[in-house]
Image (tube, rainbow, N blue to C red; front, side, top):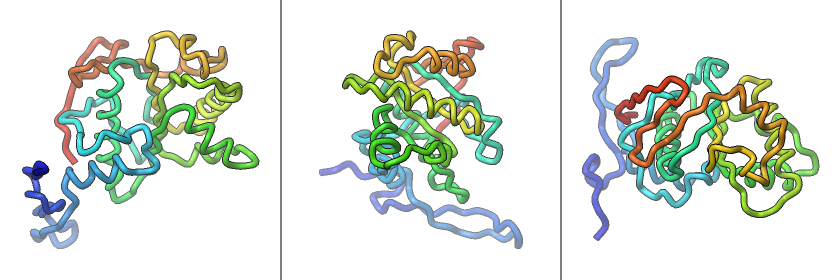
Length: 221
């Protein structure tokens, strides 16, 4: 028998009480439960990086992974190392936070090879506007299969989003970029010098190596 969500009792929805912004009168509203949001995000075609996480979502999201959707230029670009599945769970929590926000910012999470396949191979002409449309782009390096165009495409994507000041979060399975052979280029290494480096530990806590501090906040939507 499948486990029943303790938050909604299996209904997939929750009832919330709040104050109406204009009348200041109490009101009730119905929202998707966390369990439903979790399944929607895991199954989203825009979040291939998060596939197979199923119903799992994090109990905490570190404050480093807060997105200012009102002023995208204020968000740092992140170069992330550490435990891969903990990284993915944290990103899933971020997507769950913002996917159902009234402004519905577009977040794309994928593997590096997906950027080439979905925005280069599938169309006759690769336009940077295709990857600039997302309020947040998250992708992971470490492609195993050989592709001579991949490093060029990844460099173009990173450079384009730096110019348009839209945040990009990149996961590296190693602390040395040159070990990500298929994606590596000296130009990409230069671009990453403008990125903030953080590391994700297997216990779900994210450590900011540049400031040597460890702060986590409860996951809530």
